[in-house]
Figure 1 (cartoon, rainbow, N blue to C red):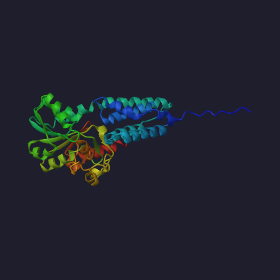
Figure 2 (cartoon, rainbow, N blue to C red; figure 1 turned 30 degrees about the horizontal axis):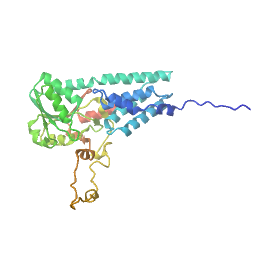
Figure 3 (cartoon, one colour; figure 1 turned 60 degrees about the vertical axis):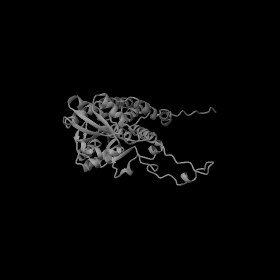
Length: 337
């Protein structure tokens, strides 16, 4: 009796497993103009290209799995999540009346890539909007480094006289990058210590920051230190403005710093007391001094923090200048189809 060989279709899961989404995501970030959410969206379009999904259910599952993989491997998943969430919602709501699912997947890839190209124009739109609120002779306080803030300040410099205080923004120190770029463009700028924000606040007209994400409450997630700047600005009766591309609007509702996805048990943890007492004595019977490095400080501190909506004057976005309440309304509409 002849043996019967059963031919099974290719395993779709194993075929997709051969595509590693994280290197695709990192490759997109090599482009200085591509932000984290856009890199995530473009990586998900590559996932669709490499997917053998035959139904919308299978495709959405593959996208969700890809988003989870990115989140698992990224050090700060917040703005990445915003991009993944936006693209997955787009795919889910996209009208799929095509008889050929392969054609639908190609169209989804095309639409995702088209959106990324269009999204690169958002910073200019935001800059044009925000410059209208900047008076000639303004003294501005900004924090860390933000591409949309940089574009806004450079545009303002073309049309008006401005001066800029920039926080050092430890632990990453990206405020120095901002100050160097502003100085190179001929904009008067000074780097201040993060601890000098209250000291300088009387001298500024308003605070202008970028964003990692703007959440459902209308609150802001941004480089750590933004929250204390907003609190001090409120106490000094100075406007606190945030700039955010709409692809950074995120369906997240933190109630405190410790609700952020980036928070983990090592942040602000206390070292074990034995670490200091267990050090071996030297030949003279003395214990060596304990040294704390900048790397240790960075590892023990957050990269981002959350600013409550009541501390934010306006959010300037490519969809307009919004109050925090307006952001909430826009998010509801954006994900309602």
